[in-house]
Length: 192
Image (cartoon, rainbow, N blue to C red; front, side, top):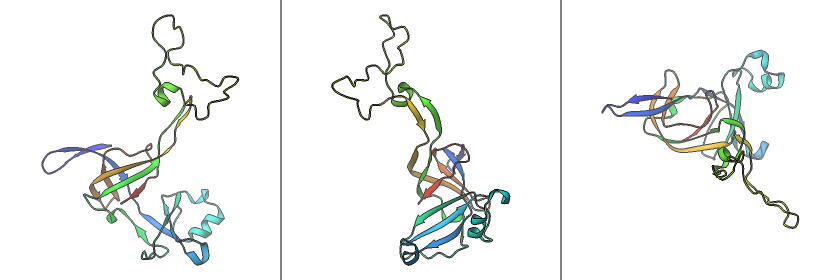
């Protein structure tokens, strides 16, 4: 993230996103595949790390690090090898960004679910951050869906209503106002 100034001198926090180029690697249609979609490839991977099946599928289009499919409607026309870059966006567009959030590992109930914890007085020795009564006695059985400690993060998150502040087609960069989910290097899905 960084900050940029507009013509009036107002500062805006932005996230810099590398937006392409993405290349159309396959067109799926209802007659052959049962559904209509376009498959695109993004990123670069070393040639030694691509297996023969992927090399045959990519042909001479490139060595992509990630593939993604998007459904298409009847009026969208794509051909294999089409390239799309940051020039498809313009300043002022409102977009939604979807990605996998940062993984935080095994966390307790206070951090994961916002539990208050036990009282800090009256003989509470080591139970300040414990969940308290879990329930599930002999007659009632276990509580399904009980909030407990566990792995936190690595969820699919969508942030909506982000405004595109700047577009740099020469370097394929987009500057989006605000924060997007994920760590540095996460592959994002941007919907206009």
